[in-house]
Image 1 (cartoon, rainbow, N blue to C red):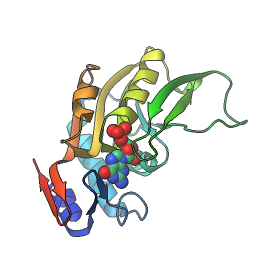
Image 2: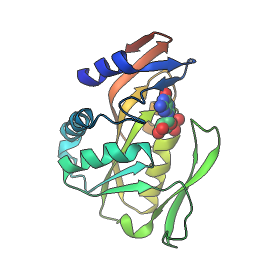
Image 3: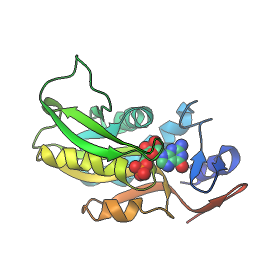
Length: 189
Ligand code: 5GP
């Protein structure tokens, strides 16, 4: 997606060798008109897959998923990272290793929001090592629903995420694929 790549080149910056900061339009401040284009692009890519639900991980996936969902006309469910007293007792759970926090955390979805007949598109902002995508895939499969695809805004191809997700049998589509990055230089596939 050219518009996204241009924006990454103009406003993104690299920290160390592995972290791409895009918090002026994706992760902290949100460019809603860019999100609209991202939503349309996900719709174009996953058009014929009869998606019934979009699943994402809180917090940064929610905005992207909600805007995309308007084009699919389906609900968004987000995987919760924190236990809360107002959460249903009946949940599907999975363990995820956090790329940004370097620790394992449990994610959960109330059972009543994932049905056997659901065809689920999983959306996230970044694909790095693939853990944030594999947790939701595991949860969808626990519900005996079908994870039909993983839609990623920015994939870092020099990390193992794509390989890890594809091993689960779920196809991955990314809107911008970064093949290498260093301070002041970002290259795309
Ligand atoms: P993974 O589980 O694939 O290793 O990492 C995916 C999650 O980590 C994403 O949901 C995102 O929140 C965060 N993440 C991974 N790499 C980056 C990065 O380069 N920049 C930012 N801003 N977040 C990242």
